[in-house]
Image (cartoon, rainbow, N blue to C red; front, side, top):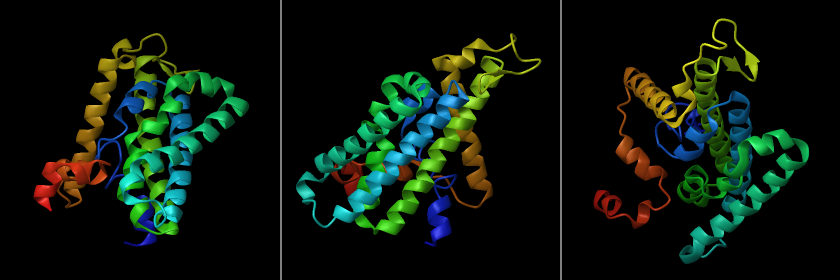
Length: 223
């Protein structure tokens, strides 16, 4: 796979949220405001880049039997650094993200890429994979948040939208609205992939991105 393909695969082809269906919890919780969505996406991308590079560098040193705990410790270290930076330089964003910022530690996207890619590939490829997946996650959050904020609150990035301000569909700012927009975006991505000639196999894609795939009986049966 070329470097460009490695970088762009996370946008549509292997989008971590809409194709691999990982990181659903922060996606639904944070996608009510576009500004918060961008902040969460960039924070997750920074952690993903740091952890992928570190795990790739240490992949031949970390014992296989304890790789998952080691991955989590490394990820937690990068999350702590990012959390401290956000709190110091953007306290408003720190408050907006709340508990979901430290919970990046257990984000399936981060651990999934560590287990399925960074632990098996070189530093350059792992960095490109991290940036691509981070961009895909950020773009998904931003589009979902734009739809929900604009149609739900009548605002975008905190600014009122003429004609929509005061006339928003409030359900879009709630959990049911998040699932509705999420489902519509998954359907749209599936249509794009089908028109591109690639059948969408969400079951296999999900296994490929799952950090517990090697311990799953279904995955062993496929192998």
